[in-house]
Image (cartoon, rainbow, N blue to C red):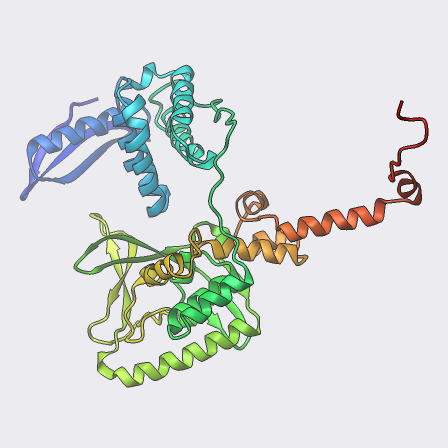
Length: 427
């Protein structure tokens, strides 16, 4: 095996080294495009080390856990997870994991280290169990890949770690909208057709917020009463081209058809007619958008950004929930209305997203099978639906108790529950 050779090709440098021959023919690995000879040599050394280790990237197992988390987020998370999930993982890692166990070497961290960390975290903070579960999920996932994917360590110390028992568990604040609250909100914003239609769509379909604001009119078949959910929007730090991006749904099962009833069909039909009239009224001042491909350094399309179409040309993105002049502001459309809902209407702890849980709870209590509810919400696992989106109604619990009482009370029971004091019982 020869050494790594660095050569200059035009204005850039290339590394090259020989690998095992195939069918008696000599084979090489080479890569060009480096600005300096030093960069080419460094990259060549890494590539050569990967090759002799059967493709495993070379990283010292003595690296700190903090450095490995950065490596894991860059190399695994950014290639496999959604943008919002990556942001959440990065925030939790920087805020809780790195300050506590990030300074330890990867090879020295044991199950005791991780168990002590998560136990101390539970004792220190008043978070919900699901919040702690997300933190532990990062630890487990990163050590799993350090063991099975990258080969940095031999054993996974986080494999059997669990969240410790919490005597007082903080429940997540999920608001169950009542008919009276919905009427109050609809009446308050009756002059804001975009918000009202978005609110009703969430109320009558249980769609995720990102899914709803990714809808185009091509996704809605008003004649058949079907909404085809295919995409979701997310936001990133704003630059000159905007901050809204459109991608796939949260999960594969999130791509689904949702049937709509007459109420929502009428609302969407009237809203579409109004939007068409506004396009005519605003004329050339009406704003249109299209999708722009965002490419990485290799020219591969990695994201799709929603950008203003200044020429009103082809490939217009026919977005549903835009302001009267066509301006698309994504989920920012909800900010002002919910400030009013919290402060003026007095419905303090509700969120737009809670319409999803309210929808799930109500259709389940109306007799829909749990599996069907999960399908409507886009969940592949019914346990997700049951654990995170379904709430018990007090009226239903009272009804269930009364029904059990009436069916199981016998004449014998009735005859003995008077519990009168008989003569001679009291001395």
